[in-house]
Length: 80
Image 1 (tube, rainbow, N blue to C red):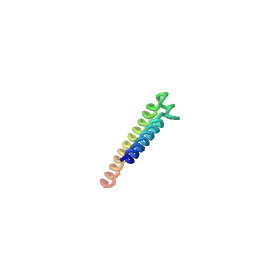
Image 2 (cartoon, rainbow, N blue to C red):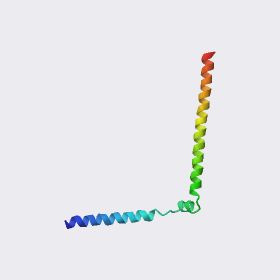
Image 3 (tube, helix red, strand yellow):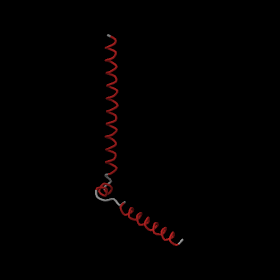
């Protein structure tokens, strides 16, 4: 019984030590610290989202144009 309690205590202490180590590593370092300190991170995220939405818009618009051209070609080929 005592051996089980010692093992449980050792596992608990190890888990607490690992959690404390993870908490210490969570502090921003390097580029994260610079981006968060100057509030640049949200700006970068917004710019990236705008670029992605622009690319998606361009993709859908190009797809619609290609479909329209294909339809015109099919109508002219089979209608003539």
